[in-house]
Amino acid sequence: MEHVNRWLGECHPILAEIFDIFSRYYLNFREEEKRAVSYCKNSLKNQEKLLGGNHIKLADGYYNLGEIYLHYAKKVDALQSYKRASQILSQNQAVETEPFVEITIKVGQLYLANNAITDALQAGRQAHGLAQELKNLPQYLSSA
Image (spheres, rainbow, N blue to C red):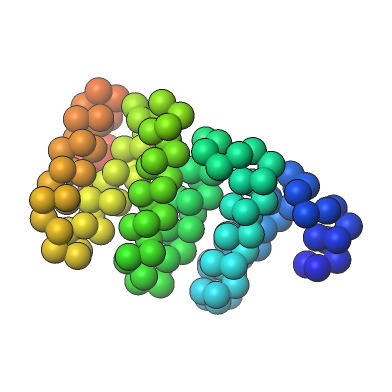
């Protein structure tokens, strides 16, 4: 990977995609948490340099990082990653979207798992209201 990094340069758009692919590989096929997290964070770092810290594409990266942490039962880290993805979507006026609803549901579930009942209820109400607006309520309720 060092050779690719040197050849493409530190801030090449393809490099972020390569890091993302490696992150998914190490999560799904190798079960290597540290490498999966490392590649995902490298992808985010590269995208932040290229696109800026609040570009909407970063929401996908933070969502993926949350998925990696959740897979390894690191609920606090997963919650932080999902909340960052949610924040980026909010700043880009993308709150009335399916990804935002999905992230809000996951945030609520993690709050509930940590016994933060008030926060879980607030996230649940927000997700429910948004899902109703999207007219996809049955789809989201079945996955919650």
